[in-house]
Amino acid sequence: MSAPFEGFRAGARASTLPAQFFTEVLPEIEDADELRVTLYALYAITRTGRPMLAMRASEMANEEPLARLFAQRGGASAVRRSLEAAAARGVLLALTLDDGDLLCFVHNEGGVRLRDRIAAGALDVPGATTSARVLVAEPVARSSRPAAVYEQEIGMLTPAVASAIAEAEQKYPEEWIVEALREASARNARSWRYAAAILQRWETEGRSDEGTGRDPGRSEANPYEHLIHRGYD
Image: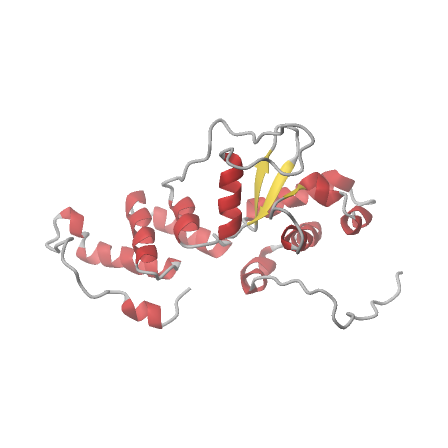
């Protein structure tokens, strides 16, 4: 048994995690290795001094803390599996490279933009000793799918929001959800609950572009203003 931890040193460099990790992501992770690797990845990718906020799976697996931890737990392949699990959960973003490696990003607005630029060829793949490429058939384009539009217009897609969008897709046409998300963004009220309120209103009153009698060119007071002040997420 290793000696007890002696405590954090005064003035030691601190790392921060979004509060959403503790309230929405942590309760859903049951695999201990996935949790360990996810926490380390959130630290390692965003730490000060990195030239780009992206990191290869092989690079991460070779760092001393993970290499030591996984030496008897499957090594680099186990780290890779845990990173893939974190990407499937939506905490990380990942691009598969043609040299067999996996390029990982934190799933936030900056990570989405960086992933798309690398996938489109606008930026070189970091850490490549040769001309590594992303395994995609063509440059990434913005999708009209609701989940992708949420990431583009609103922010990080959490498991709770992904579930809510999936439920909405069973109830509303896809184009309604996309337009509701874009309207929420345009009104500077970037939240799923705000978009859901728009959908509910359209369901009750109809959409202005479907002959419901509302003039789409007429300026009107924001019908969802109360949601902004109630601080919906």
